[in-house]
Length: 319
Length: 319
Image 1 (cartoon, rainbow over the protein chains, first blue to last red):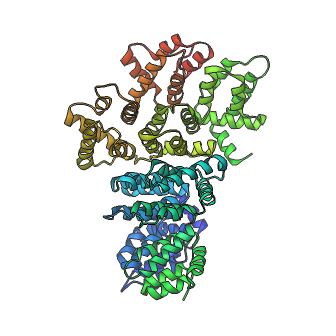
Image 2: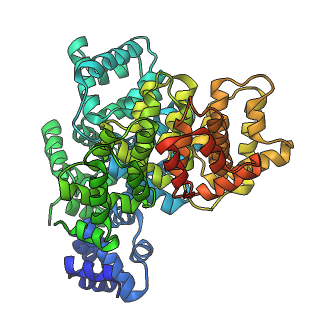
Image 3: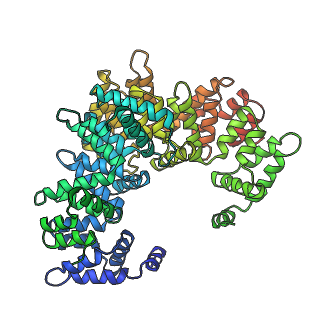
Protein backbone atom coordinates (compact mmCIF):
# COMPACT_ATOMS: atom_id res chain seq x y z
CA UNK A 1 0.00 0.00 0.00
CA UNK A 2 1.38 3.42 -0.89
CA UNK A 3 2.12 5.97 1.80
CA UNK A 4 -0.48 8.31 0.36
CA UNK A 5 -3.13 5.63 0.82
CA UNK A 6 -2.23 5.20 4.46
CA UNK A 7 -2.48 8.92 5.01
CA UNK A 8 -5.84 8.92 3.27
CA UNK A 9 -7.16 6.16 5.47
CA UNK A 10 -6.14 8.07 8.50
CA UNK A 11 -8.19 11.02 7.38
CA UNK A 12 -11.21 9.10 6.27
CA UNK A 13 -11.40 5.56 7.52
CA UNK A 14 -14.76 4.78 5.87
CA UNK A 15 -13.41 5.11 2.34
CA UNK A 16 -13.19 1.33 1.95
CA UNK A 17 -16.65 0.73 3.43
CA UNK A 18 -18.11 3.34 1.11
CA UNK A 19 -16.32 1.78 -1.86
CA UNK A 20 -17.78 -1.62 -0.95
CA UNK A 21 -21.25 -0.21 -0.59
CA UNK A 22 -20.99 1.52 -3.95
CA UNK A 23 -19.77 -1.70 -5.55
CA UNK A 24 -22.81 -3.47 -4.15
CA UNK A 25 -25.10 -0.72 -5.40
CA UNK A 26 -23.73 -1.23 -8.91
CA UNK A 27 -23.96 -5.02 -8.95
CA UNK A 28 -26.74 -7.47 -9.72
CA UNK A 29 -30.09 -6.61 -11.29
CA UNK A 30 -30.55 -2.91 -11.63
CA UNK A 31 -28.60 -0.24 -9.86
CA UNK A 32 -29.38 0.98 -6.37
CA UNK A 33 -29.46 4.67 -7.15
CA UNK A 34 -30.76 5.55 -3.72
CA UNK A 35 -27.71 4.00 -2.07
CA UNK A 36 -25.41 5.88 -4.43
CA UNK A 37 -27.12 9.16 -3.61
CA UNK A 38 -27.11 8.53 0.11
CA UNK A 39 -23.38 7.80 0.11
CA UNK A 40 -21.92 10.24 -2.41
CA UNK A 41 -24.38 13.01 -1.64
CA UNK A 42 -22.97 13.20 1.87
CA UNK A 43 -19.25 13.07 1.20
CA UNK A 44 -16.98 16.05 0.67
CA UNK A 45 -14.40 16.39 -2.12
CA UNK A 46 -11.56 14.87 -0.12
CA UNK A 47 -13.72 11.95 0.98
CA UNK A 48 -14.95 11.31 -2.56
CA UNK A 49 -11.36 11.27 -3.74
CA UNK A 50 -10.46 8.67 -1.14
CA UNK A 51 -13.48 6.59 -2.05
CA UNK A 52 -12.31 6.62 -5.69
CA UNK A 53 -8.82 5.51 -4.60
CA UNK A 54 -10.19 2.81 -2.30
CA UNK A 55 -12.52 1.54 -5.03
CA UNK A 56 -9.65 1.36 -7.52
CA UNK A 57 -7.53 -0.51 -5.00
CA UNK A 58 -10.25 -3.01 -4.06
CA UNK A 59 -11.66 -3.74 -7.51
CA UNK A 60 -9.04 -2.56 -10.02
CA UNK A 61 -11.81 -0.60 -11.65
CA UNK A 62 -12.43 3.12 -12.13
CA UNK A 63 -15.43 4.10 -10.03
CA UNK A 64 -16.19 7.10 -12.22
CA UNK A 65 -16.37 4.92 -15.34
CA UNK A 66 -18.45 2.33 -13.55
CA UNK A 67 -20.99 4.91 -12.43
CA UNK A 68 -21.10 6.37 -15.91
CA UNK A 69 -22.03 2.98 -17.29
CA UNK A 70 -24.65 2.33 -14.59
CA UNK A 71 -26.44 5.66 -14.59
CA UNK A 72 -28.19 7.65 -17.30
CA UNK A 73 -29.39 11.09 -18.29
CA UNK A 74 -29.25 14.15 -16.10
CA UNK A 75 -28.66 12.04 -13.02
CA UNK A 76 -25.55 10.48 -14.56
CA UNK A 77 -24.28 13.90 -15.60
CA UNK A 78 -24.80 15.32 -12.12
CA UNK A 79 -23.13 12.38 -10.34
CA UNK A 80 -20.24 12.44 -12.80
CA UNK A 81 -19.60 16.13 -12.17
CA UNK A 82 -20.03 15.73 -8.45
CA UNK A 83 -17.63 12.84 -7.97
CA UNK A 84 -14.66 14.56 -9.66
CA UNK A 85 -12.12 16.76 -7.89
CA UNK A 86 -13.25 20.38 -8.11
CA UNK A 87 -10.42 21.46 -10.44
CA UNK A 88 -10.91 18.44 -12.65
CA UNK A 89 -14.65 19.05 -12.74
CA UNK A 90 -14.08 22.64 -13.83
CA UNK A 91 -11.76 21.37 -16.56
CA UNK A 92 -14.58 19.12 -17.80
CA UNK A 93 -17.13 21.95 -17.62
CA UNK A 94 -14.78 24.26 -19.53
CA UNK A 95 -14.11 21.63 -22.16
CA UNK A 96 -17.82 20.97 -22.69
CA UNK A 97 -18.35 24.73 -23.00
CA UNK A 98 -15.53 25.10 -25.55
CA UNK A 99 -16.68 22.19 -27.69
CA UNK A 100 -20.18 23.54 -28.23
CA UNK A 101 -20.78 24.83 -31.74
CA UNK A 102 -21.15 28.24 -30.12
CA UNK A 103 -18.66 28.39 -27.26
CA UNK A 104 -20.60 28.79 -23.99
CA UNK A 105 -18.78 31.86 -22.80
CA UNK A 106 -20.84 32.09 -19.60
CA UNK A 107 -19.24 28.94 -18.21
CA UNK A 108 -15.75 30.09 -19.21
CA UNK A 109 -16.28 33.47 -17.57
CA UNK A 110 -17.79 31.89 -14.47
CA UNK A 111 -14.82 29.56 -13.96
CA UNK A 112 -12.18 32.19 -14.64
CA UNK A 113 -13.72 34.97 -12.57
CA UNK A 114 -15.33 33.20 -9.63
CA UNK A 115 -12.63 30.68 -8.77
CA UNK A 116 -9.72 32.12 -6.79
CA UNK A 117 -6.53 32.78 -8.78
CA UNK A 118 -4.92 29.67 -7.31
CA UNK A 119 -7.98 27.56 -8.01
CA UNK A 120 -7.95 28.75 -11.62
CA UNK A 121 -4.33 27.61 -11.94
CA UNK A 122 -5.39 24.19 -10.69
CA UNK A 123 -8.13 24.11 -13.30
CA UNK A 124 -5.57 24.92 -16.00
CA UNK A 125 -3.33 22.10 -14.78
CA UNK A 126 -6.24 19.65 -14.68
CA UNK A 127 -7.30 20.73 -18.17
CA UNK A 128 -3.86 19.99 -19.60
CA UNK A 129 -3.78 16.71 -17.82
CA UNK A 130 -7.03 15.61 -19.41
CA UNK A 131 -6.88 17.16 -22.85
CA UNK A 132 -3.16 17.56 -23.68
CA UNK A 133 -3.81 21.17 -24.65
CA UNK A 134 -3.78 24.29 -22.56
CA UNK A 135 -7.11 25.81 -21.60
CA UNK A 136 -6.26 29.15 -23.18
CA UNK A 137 -5.09 27.37 -26.33
CA UNK A 138 -8.46 25.70 -26.81
CA UNK A 139 -10.43 28.81 -25.91
CA UNK A 140 -8.36 30.80 -28.41
CA UNK A 141 -8.75 28.21 -31.16
CA UNK A 142 -12.54 28.09 -30.82
CA UNK A 143 -13.37 31.77 -30.52
CA UNK A 144 -12.55 34.91 -32.44
CA UNK A 145 -12.50 38.67 -32.37
CA UNK A 146 -13.32 40.63 -29.25
CA UNK A 147 -14.80 37.68 -27.39
CA UNK A 148 -11.55 35.80 -27.90
CA UNK A 149 -9.53 38.66 -26.46
CA UNK A 150 -11.76 38.78 -23.40
CA UNK A 151 -12.01 35.04 -22.78
CA UNK A 152 -8.33 34.27 -23.39
CA UNK A 153 -7.39 37.12 -21.07
CA UNK A 154 -9.75 35.86 -18.38
CA UNK A 155 -8.68 32.20 -18.43
CA UNK A 156 -4.98 33.16 -18.55
CA UNK A 157 -5.16 35.59 -15.68
CA UNK A 158 -3.48 34.94 -12.38
CA UNK A 159 -4.76 37.96 -10.52
CA UNK A 160 -3.15 39.40 -7.45
CA UNK A 161 -5.31 38.02 -4.66
CA UNK A 162 -4.43 40.35 -1.83
CA UNK A 163 -6.24 43.31 -0.41
CA UNK A 164 -3.71 46.02 -1.29
CA UNK A 165 -5.24 48.48 -3.70
CA UNK A 166 -4.32 51.82 -5.12
CA UNK A 167 -7.51 53.69 -4.49
CA UNK A 168 -6.35 57.16 -5.28
CA UNK A 169 -4.69 56.63 -8.60
CA UNK A 170 -6.07 53.56 -10.27
CA UNK A 171 -9.52 53.62 -8.79
CA UNK A 172 -10.19 56.99 -10.27
CA UNK A 173 -8.41 56.97 -13.58
CA UNK A 174 -9.46 53.46 -14.56
CA UNK A 175 -13.06 54.18 -13.58
CA UNK A 176 -12.81 57.11 -16.02
CA UNK A 177 -11.27 54.96 -18.75
CA UNK A 178 -14.15 52.51 -18.42
CA UNK A 179 -16.75 55.25 -18.35
CA UNK A 180 -15.35 56.97 -21.43
CA UNK A 181 -15.20 53.69 -23.36
CA UNK A 182 -18.76 52.76 -22.44
CA UNK A 183 -20.04 56.23 -23.26
CA UNK A 184 -18.47 55.99 -26.72
CA UNK A 185 -19.81 52.43 -27.05
CA UNK A 186 -16.18 51.30 -27.45
CA UNK A 187 -16.90 48.22 -25.37
CA UNK A 188 -14.15 46.28 -27.11
CA UNK A 189 -11.40 48.79 -26.42
CA UNK A 190 -8.09 47.27 -25.39
CA UNK A 191 -8.23 49.25 -22.18
CA UNK A 192 -11.56 47.80 -21.09
CA UNK A 193 -10.22 44.30 -21.70
CA UNK A 194 -6.92 45.10 -19.98
CA UNK A 195 -8.62 46.38 -16.85
CA UNK A 196 -11.12 43.53 -16.56
CA UNK A 197 -8.60 40.78 -17.26
CA UNK A 198 -5.63 41.93 -15.19
CA UNK A 199 -6.71 43.95 -12.15
CA UNK A 200 -7.25 42.21 -8.83
CA UNK A 201 -10.79 41.70 -7.59
CA UNK A 202 -10.19 44.14 -4.73
CA UNK A 203 -8.92 46.75 -7.17
CA UNK A 204 -11.85 46.19 -9.53
CA UNK A 205 -14.28 46.63 -6.68
CA UNK A 206 -12.67 49.97 -5.90
CA UNK A 207 -12.86 50.95 -9.57
CA UNK A 208 -16.53 49.98 -9.89
CA UNK A 209 -17.43 51.75 -6.65
CA UNK A 210 -15.76 54.90 -7.92
CA UNK A 211 -17.62 54.53 -11.20
CA UNK A 212 -20.93 54.39 -9.38
CA UNK A 213 -20.11 57.32 -7.12
CA UNK A 214 -19.00 59.55 -9.98
CA UNK A 215 -21.69 58.66 -12.47
CA UNK A 216 -24.65 57.79 -10.27
CA UNK A 217 -25.14 54.52 -12.08
CA UNK A 218 -23.51 51.11 -11.98
CA UNK A 219 -21.15 49.85 -14.65
CA UNK A 220 -23.27 46.72 -15.06
CA UNK A 221 -26.27 48.85 -16.02
CA UNK A 222 -24.19 50.96 -18.39
CA UNK A 223 -22.66 47.91 -20.05
CA UNK A 224 -26.05 46.70 -21.19
CA UNK A 225 -26.94 50.13 -22.56
CA UNK A 226 -30.28 51.30 -23.89
CA UNK A 227 -30.50 49.28 -27.06
CA UNK A 228 -30.45 45.46 -26.92
CA UNK A 229 -26.89 44.45 -25.96
CA UNK A 230 -24.78 42.35 -28.31
CA UNK A 231 -23.09 39.12 -27.23
CA UNK A 232 -19.85 40.87 -26.37
CA UNK A 233 -21.61 43.37 -24.12
CA UNK A 234 -23.39 40.48 -22.43
CA UNK A 235 -20.05 38.76 -21.87
CA UNK A 236 -18.61 41.91 -20.28
CA UNK A 237 -21.70 42.18 -18.12
CA UNK A 238 -21.32 38.57 -16.96
CA UNK A 239 -17.63 39.20 -16.28
CA UNK A 240 -18.30 42.15 -14.02
CA UNK A 241 -21.05 40.31 -12.16
CA UNK A 242 -18.88 37.21 -11.62
CA UNK A 243 -16.00 39.35 -10.40
CA UNK A 244 -18.01 41.45 -8.01
CA UNK A 245 -21.04 39.52 -6.80
CA UNK A 246 -20.91 35.78 -7.48
CA UNK A 247 -23.78 34.98 -5.09
CA UNK A 248 -26.17 37.25 -6.89
CA UNK A 249 -24.91 35.94 -10.21
CA UNK A 250 -25.52 32.32 -9.20
CA UNK A 251 -28.97 33.08 -7.79
CA UNK A 252 -29.86 34.59 -11.16
CA UNK A 253 -28.43 31.64 -13.11
CA UNK A 254 -30.50 29.29 -10.95
CA UNK A 255 -33.59 31.36 -11.44
CA UNK A 256 -33.21 31.39 -15.21
CA UNK A 257 -32.29 27.71 -15.09
CA UNK A 258 -35.27 26.41 -13.17
CA UNK A 259 -37.61 28.29 -15.47
CA UNK A 260 -36.17 26.26 -18.32
CA UNK A 261 -35.96 22.91 -16.52
CA UNK A 262 -37.06 20.15 -18.82
CA UNK A 263 -35.05 21.79 -21.59
CA UNK A 264 -31.83 22.85 -19.88
CA UNK A 265 -30.67 21.04 -16.77
CA UNK A 266 -27.02 21.90 -17.26
CA UNK A 267 -26.82 25.23 -15.53
CA UNK A 268 -28.88 24.13 -12.52
CA UNK A 269 -26.72 21.02 -12.13
CA UNK A 270 -23.58 23.09 -12.58
CA UNK A 271 -24.40 25.67 -9.95
CA UNK A 272 -25.63 23.18 -7.36
CA UNK A 273 -22.74 20.76 -7.87
CA UNK A 274 -19.98 23.38 -7.96
CA UNK A 275 -21.27 25.44 -5.04
CA UNK A 276 -22.58 22.68 -2.72
CA UNK A 277 -19.33 22.65 -0.76
CA UNK A 278 -18.75 26.38 -1.04
CA UNK A 279 -21.53 28.90 -0.65
CA UNK A 280 -24.75 27.17 -1.69
CA UNK A 281 -26.34 28.13 1.61
CA UNK A 282 -25.79 31.83 0.94
CA UNK A 283 -27.02 31.41 -2.62
CA UNK A 284 -30.18 29.68 -1.38
CA UNK A 285 -30.88 32.50 1.06
CA UNK A 286 -30.39 35.08 -1.64
CA UNK A 287 -32.59 33.07 -3.98
CA UNK A 288 -35.36 33.06 -1.42
CA UNK A 289 -34.98 36.76 -0.78
CA UNK A 290 -35.25 37.56 -4.47
CA UNK A 291 -37.96 35.10 -5.46
CA UNK A 292 -39.95 34.50 -2.26
CA UNK A 293 -39.89 30.78 -2.87
CA UNK A 294 -37.31 28.31 -1.55
CA UNK A 295 -34.94 26.97 -4.19
CA UNK A 296 -35.53 23.41 -2.96
CA UNK A 297 -39.24 23.80 -3.60
CA UNK A 298 -38.76 24.91 -7.20
CA UNK A 299 -36.20 22.21 -7.88
CA UNK A 300 -38.50 19.57 -6.36
CA UNK A 301 -41.37 20.78 -8.53
CA UNK A 302 -39.44 21.00 -11.77
CA UNK A 303 -37.35 17.82 -11.60
CA UNK A 304 -38.09 14.17 -10.94
CA UNK A 305 -36.68 10.78 -10.06
CA UNK A 306 -33.08 10.18 -9.03
CA UNK A 307 -31.95 13.47 -10.51
CA UNK A 308 -34.37 15.30 -8.23
CA UNK A 309 -33.38 13.21 -5.22
CA UNK A 310 -29.71 13.92 -5.87
CA UNK A 311 -30.07 17.68 -6.31
CA UNK A 312 -32.19 17.94 -3.18
CA UNK A 313 -29.59 15.96 -1.22
CA UNK A 314 -26.90 18.40 -2.34
CA UNK A 315 -29.25 21.22 -1.40
CA UNK A 316 -29.30 19.75 2.11
CA UNK A 317 -32.87 18.55 2.02
CA UNK A 318 -33.40 14.96 3.12
CA UNK A 319 -36.62 13.15 2.45
CA UNK B 1 13.36 25.41 15.32
CA UNK B 2 10.79 24.87 12.60
CA UNK B 3 10.49 21.48 10.93
CA UNK B 4 11.44 22.99 7.60
CA UNK B 5 14.74 24.19 9.08
CA UNK B 6 15.59 20.74 10.30
CA UNK B 7 14.91 19.26 6.90
CA UNK B 8 17.09 21.94 5.35
CA UNK B 9 19.96 21.16 7.69
CA UNK B 10 19.73 17.54 6.80
CA UNK B 11 20.20 18.35 3.15
CA UNK B 12 22.99 20.84 3.54
CA UNK B 13 24.82 20.72 6.83
CA UNK B 14 27.32 23.49 5.97
CA UNK B 15 24.64 26.17 5.75
CA UNK B 16 25.51 27.48 9.22
CA UNK B 17 29.25 27.42 8.58
CA UNK B 18 28.73 29.29 5.34
CA UNK B 19 26.53 31.82 7.08
CA UNK B 20 29.22 32.41 9.70
CA UNK B 21 31.92 32.81 7.06
CA UNK B 22 29.77 35.30 5.17
CA UNK B 23 29.12 37.23 8.37
CA UNK B 24 32.85 37.41 8.95
CA UNK B 25 33.45 38.56 5.37
CA UNK B 26 31.01 41.42 5.93
CA UNK B 27 32.40 42.57 9.27
CA UNK B 28 35.26 44.81 10.29
CA UNK B 29 37.25 47.09 8.00
CA UNK B 30 36.31 46.57 4.38
CA UNK B 31 34.51 43.62 2.97
CA UNK B 32 36.17 40.37 2.00
CA UNK B 33 34.75 40.09 -1.50
CA UNK B 34 36.94 37.14 -2.39
CA UNK B 35 35.49 35.09 0.47
CA UNK B 36 31.97 35.99 -0.62
CA UNK B 37 32.72 34.91 -4.17
CA UNK B 38 34.39 31.71 -3.14
CA UNK B 39 31.44 30.69 -0.97
CA UNK B 40 28.40 31.86 -2.91
CA UNK B 41 29.92 31.19 -6.32
CA UNK B 42 30.06 27.49 -5.50
CA UNK B 43 26.64 26.94 -3.96
CA UNK B 44 23.52 25.89 -5.83
CA UNK B 45 20.09 27.49 -5.46
CA UNK B 46 18.93 25.18 -2.69
CA UNK B 47 22.17 25.66 -0.76
CA UNK B 48 22.02 29.43 -1.12
CA UNK B 49 18.47 29.36 0.20
CA UNK B 50 19.57 27.42 3.23
CA UNK B 51 22.47 29.78 3.81
CA UNK B 52 19.98 32.69 3.78
CA UNK B 53 17.79 30.87 6.32
CA UNK B 54 20.76 29.96 8.53
CA UNK B 55 22.04 33.55 8.38
CA UNK B 56 18.66 34.91 9.39
CA UNK B 57 18.45 32.46 12.25
CA UNK B 58 21.95 33.16 13.56
CA UNK B 59 22.02 36.94 13.20
CA UNK B 60 18.39 38.06 12.88
CA UNK B 61 19.47 39.90 9.77
CA UNK B 62 18.62 39.52 6.09
CA UNK B 63 21.73 38.31 4.27
CA UNK B 64 20.55 39.74 0.95
CA UNK B 65 20.14 43.21 2.45
CA UNK B 66 23.49 42.97 4.21
CA UNK B 67 25.28 42.06 1.00
CA UNK B 68 23.49 44.87 -0.83
CA UNK B 69 24.84 47.33 1.72
CA UNK B 70 28.38 45.90 1.61
CA UNK B 71 28.85 45.59 -2.14
CA UNK B 72 28.61 48.08 -4.99
CA UNK B 73 28.17 48.43 -8.71
CA UNK B 74 27.91 45.56 -11.17
CA UNK B 75 29.34 43.16 -8.61
CA UNK B 76 26.55 43.97 -6.16
CA UNK B 77 23.94 43.57 -8.88
CA UNK B 78 25.33 40.20 -9.93
CA UNK B 79 25.55 38.84 -6.37
CA UNK B 80 22.07 40.12 -5.60
CA UNK B 81 20.60 38.35 -8.61
CA UNK B 82 22.58 35.21 -7.93
CA UNK B 83 21.63 34.80 -4.30
CA UNK B 84 17.87 34.90 -4.88
CA UNK B 85 15.71 31.88 -5.62
CA UNK B 86 15.43 31.46 -9.39
CA UNK B 87 11.72 32.36 -9.55
CA UNK B 88 12.22 35.34 -7.27
CA UNK B 89 15.20 36.47 -9.34
CA UNK B 90 13.09 36.30 -12.50
CA UNK B 91 10.42 38.37 -10.78
CA UNK B 92 13.07 41.01 -10.02
CA UNK B 93 14.41 40.91 -13.58
CA UNK B 94 10.90 41.26 -14.98
CA UNK B 95 10.10 44.14 -12.66
CA UNK B 96 13.28 45.99 -13.62
CA UNK B 97 12.39 45.43 -17.29
CA UNK B 98 8.84 46.74 -16.81
CA UNK B 99 9.91 49.82 -14.90
CA UNK B 100 12.26 51.10 -17.59
CA UNK B 101 10.94 54.12 -19.44
CA UNK B 102 10.80 51.86 -22.50
CA UNK B 103 9.77 48.41 -21.27
CA UNK B 104 12.62 45.98 -22.00
CA UNK B 105 10.55 43.46 -23.91
CA UNK B 106 13.53 41.16 -24.53
CA UNK B 107 13.73 40.24 -20.85
CA UNK B 108 9.97 39.70 -20.62
CA UNK B 109 10.00 37.48 -23.70
CA UNK B 110 13.04 35.58 -22.46
CA UNK B 111 11.45 34.80 -19.11
CA UNK B 112 8.06 33.85 -20.53
CA UNK B 113 9.32 31.72 -23.39
CA UNK B 114 12.46 30.04 -22.06
CA UNK B 115 11.29 29.07 -18.59
CA UNK B 116 9.14 25.95 -18.46
CA UNK B 117 5.39 26.55 -18.05
CA UNK B 118 5.59 25.53 -14.39
CA UNK B 119 8.63 27.73 -13.79
CA UNK B 120 6.77 30.66 -15.31
CA UNK B 121 3.90 30.09 -12.87
CA UNK B 122 6.41 30.23 -10.02
CA UNK B 123 7.74 33.51 -11.39
CA UNK B 124 4.19 34.90 -11.45
CA UNK B 125 3.68 33.85 -7.84
CA UNK B 126 7.01 35.34 -6.77
CA UNK B 127 6.18 38.56 -8.62
CA UNK B 128 2.88 38.95 -6.76
CA UNK B 129 4.57 38.19 -3.51
CA UNK B 130 7.08 40.99 -4.04
CA UNK B 131 5.06 43.63 -5.81
CA UNK B 132 1.43 43.07 -4.78
CA UNK B 133 0.41 43.19 -8.43
CA UNK B 134 0.22 40.44 -10.99
CA UNK B 135 2.99 40.24 -13.59
CA UNK B 136 0.54 40.49 -16.48
CA UNK B 137 -1.15 43.44 -14.79
CA UNK B 138 2.09 45.42 -14.69
CA UNK B 139 3.13 44.41 -18.19
CA UNK B 140 -0.30 45.47 -19.49
CA UNK B 141 -0.23 48.78 -17.64
CA UNK B 142 3.21 49.73 -19.01
CA UNK B 143 2.84 48.74 -22.65
CA UNK B 144 0.36 49.36 -25.40
CA UNK B 145 -0.88 48.27 -28.79
CA UNK B 146 0.45 45.17 -30.50
CA UNK B 147 3.41 44.77 -28.18
CA UNK B 148 1.05 44.69 -25.24
CA UNK B 149 -1.04 41.94 -26.82
CA UNK B 150 2.06 39.87 -27.45
CA UNK B 151 3.72 40.40 -24.06
CA UNK B 152 0.58 39.96 -21.98
CA UNK B 153 -0.22 36.78 -23.90
CA UNK B 154 3.30 35.46 -23.34
CA UNK B 155 3.54 36.14 -19.62
CA UNK B 156 0.02 34.80 -19.02
CA UNK B 157 0.53 31.59 -20.93
CA UNK B 158 0.62 28.23 -19.24
CA UNK B 159 1.51 26.15 -22.25
CA UNK B 160 0.89 22.46 -22.51
CA UNK B 161 4.29 20.99 -21.77
CA UNK B 162 3.92 17.50 -23.18
CA UNK B 163 5.08 15.99 -26.42
CA UNK B 164 1.70 15.26 -27.97
CA UNK B 165 1.25 17.29 -31.12
CA UNK B 166 -1.18 17.35 -33.98
CA UNK B 167 1.20 17.31 -36.87
CA UNK B 168 -1.25 16.73 -39.65
CA UNK B 169 -3.82 19.33 -38.92
CA UNK B 170 -2.32 22.13 -36.89
CA UNK B 171 1.23 21.90 -38.16
CA UNK B 172 0.10 22.53 -41.66
CA UNK B 173 -2.74 24.97 -41.36
CA UNK B 174 -1.09 27.14 -38.73
CA UNK B 175 2.15 27.23 -40.71
CA UNK B 176 0.01 28.57 -43.56
CA UNK B 177 -1.72 31.12 -41.34
CA UNK B 178 1.67 32.42 -40.22
CA UNK B 179 3.05 32.47 -43.75
CA UNK B 180 0.06 34.33 -45.15
CA UNK B 181 0.20 36.91 -42.36
CA UNK B 182 3.93 37.50 -42.81
CA UNK B 183 3.57 37.72 -46.58
CA UNK B 184 0.92 40.39 -46.17
CA UNK B 185 3.07 42.10 -43.51
CA UNK B 186 0.16 41.59 -41.10
CA UNK B 187 2.62 40.77 -38.31
CA UNK B 188 0.21 41.98 -35.68
CA UNK B 189 -2.70 39.80 -36.77
CA UNK B 190 -4.63 38.19 -33.92
CA UNK B 191 -3.87 34.78 -35.39
CA UNK B 192 -0.10 35.28 -35.24
CA UNK B 193 -0.38 36.35 -31.61
CA UNK B 194 -2.77 33.50 -30.81
CA UNK B 195 -0.46 30.86 -32.24
CA UNK B 196 2.73 32.18 -30.63
CA UNK B 197 1.17 32.74 -27.22
CA UNK B 198 -0.93 29.60 -26.81
CA UNK B 199 0.57 26.63 -28.67
CA UNK B 200 2.94 24.26 -26.90
CA UNK B 201 6.63 24.43 -27.70
CA UNK B 202 6.50 20.98 -29.31
CA UNK B 203 3.58 22.08 -31.48
CA UNK B 204 5.31 25.32 -32.44
CA UNK B 205 8.40 23.42 -33.46
CA UNK B 206 6.26 21.27 -35.74
CA UNK B 207 4.63 24.40 -37.16
CA UNK B 208 7.96 26.16 -37.80
CA UNK B 209 9.46 23.02 -39.36
CA UNK B 210 6.52 22.78 -41.70
CA UNK B 211 6.89 26.44 -42.53
CA UNK B 212 10.52 25.92 -43.51
CA UNK B 213 9.77 22.83 -45.57
CA UNK B 214 6.96 24.45 -47.50
CA UNK B 215 8.55 27.82 -48.06
CA UNK B 216 12.26 27.03 -48.19
CA UNK B 217 12.99 29.72 -45.64
CA UNK B 218 12.73 30.01 -41.88
CA UNK B 219 10.05 32.00 -40.14
CA UNK B 220 12.72 33.90 -38.19
CA UNK B 221 14.22 35.17 -41.45
CA UNK B 222 10.80 36.08 -42.84
CA UNK B 223 9.80 37.90 -39.65
CA UNK B 224 12.64 40.37 -40.06
CA UNK B 225 11.73 40.97 -43.70
CA UNK B 226 13.69 42.94 -46.29
CA UNK B 227 13.27 46.44 -44.93
CA UNK B 228 14.50 47.31 -41.44
CA UNK B 229 12.17 45.56 -38.97
CA UNK B 230 10.09 47.56 -36.53
CA UNK B 231 10.10 46.92 -32.78
CA UNK B 232 7.11 44.62 -32.96
CA UNK B 233 8.73 42.47 -35.64
CA UNK B 234 11.87 42.29 -33.52
CA UNK B 235 9.77 41.18 -30.55
CA UNK B 236 8.17 38.43 -32.64
CA UNK B 237 11.60 37.39 -33.84
CA UNK B 238 12.91 37.19 -30.26
CA UNK B 239 9.82 35.21 -29.26
CA UNK B 240 10.34 32.57 -31.94
CA UNK B 241 14.04 32.26 -31.12
CA UNK B 242 13.40 31.91 -27.39
CA UNK B 243 10.73 29.30 -28.02
CA UNK B 244 12.75 27.22 -30.42
CA UNK B 245 16.45 27.63 -29.73
CA UNK B 246 17.27 29.21 -26.37
CA UNK B 247 20.96 28.19 -26.48
CA UNK B 248 21.55 29.98 -29.74
CA UNK B 249 19.55 32.93 -28.46
CA UNK B 250 21.65 33.18 -25.28
CA UNK B 251 24.93 32.83 -27.18
CA UNK B 252 23.86 35.77 -29.33
CA UNK B 253 22.81 37.87 -26.33
CA UNK B 254 26.20 37.21 -24.74
CA UNK B 255 28.00 38.11 -27.93
CA UNK B 256 26.12 41.40 -28.29
CA UNK B 257 26.59 41.96 -24.56
CA UNK B 258 30.35 41.56 -24.32
CA UNK B 259 30.80 43.90 -27.28
CA UNK B 260 29.05 46.55 -25.21
CA UNK B 261 30.69 45.76 -21.85
CA UNK B 262 31.58 48.94 -20.09
CA UNK B 263 28.23 50.38 -21.11
CA UNK B 264 25.82 47.52 -20.55
CA UNK B 265 26.65 44.78 -18.08
CA UNK B 266 23.05 43.82 -17.45
CA UNK B 267 22.52 41.27 -20.19
CA UNK B 268 25.84 39.51 -19.60
CA UNK B 269 25.14 39.29 -15.88
CA UNK B 270 21.59 38.13 -16.57
CA UNK B 271 22.53 35.31 -18.90
CA UNK B 272 25.42 34.04 -16.80
CA UNK B 273 23.52 34.21 -13.51
CA UNK B 274 20.27 32.70 -14.79
CA UNK B 275 21.92 29.91 -16.81
CA UNK B 276 24.83 28.98 -14.52
CA UNK B 277 22.86 26.16 -12.93
CA UNK B 278 21.04 25.23 -16.12
CA UNK B 279 22.77 25.08 -19.48
CA UNK B 280 25.66 27.54 -19.33
CA UNK B 281 28.04 24.80 -20.43
CA UNK B 282 26.12 24.22 -23.65
CA UNK B 283 25.88 27.96 -24.22
CA UNK B 284 29.64 28.34 -23.75
CA UNK B 285 30.31 25.60 -26.28
CA UNK B 286 27.98 27.18 -28.77
CA UNK B 287 29.57 30.55 -28.13
CA UNK B 288 32.99 29.17 -28.90
CA UNK B 289 31.72 27.43 -32.03
CA UNK B 290 30.21 30.66 -33.32
CA UNK B 291 32.94 33.10 -32.31
CA UNK B 292 36.13 31.00 -32.16
CA UNK B 293 37.03 32.56 -28.83
CA UNK B 294 36.13 31.18 -25.40
CA UNK B 295 33.48 33.16 -23.57
CA UNK B 296 35.62 33.19 -20.40
CA UNK B 297 38.42 34.89 -22.33
CA UNK B 298 36.20 37.69 -23.60
CA UNK B 299 34.59 38.20 -20.21
CA UNK B 300 38.04 38.29 -18.54
CA UNK B 301 39.22 40.86 -21.07
CA UNK B 302 36.19 43.11 -20.91
CA UNK B 303 35.49 43.15 -17.16
CA UNK B 304 37.57 43.76 -14.05
CA UNK B 305 37.80 43.41 -10.30
CA UNK B 306 35.32 41.48 -8.19
CA UNK B 307 32.70 41.58 -10.90
CA UNK B 308 35.12 39.82 -13.23
CA UNK B 309 36.12 37.30 -10.55
CA UNK B 310 32.50 36.52 -9.81
CA UNK B 311 31.44 36.02 -13.43
CA UNK B 312 34.42 33.81 -14.11
CA UNK B 313 33.62 31.73 -11.03
CA UNK B 314 30.08 31.21 -12.31
CA UNK B 315 31.56 30.34 -15.69
CA UNK B 316 33.48 27.57 -13.94
CA UNK B 317 36.92 29.13 -14.28
CA UNK B 318 38.95 29.29 -11.09
CA UNK B 319 42.06 31.37 -10.82
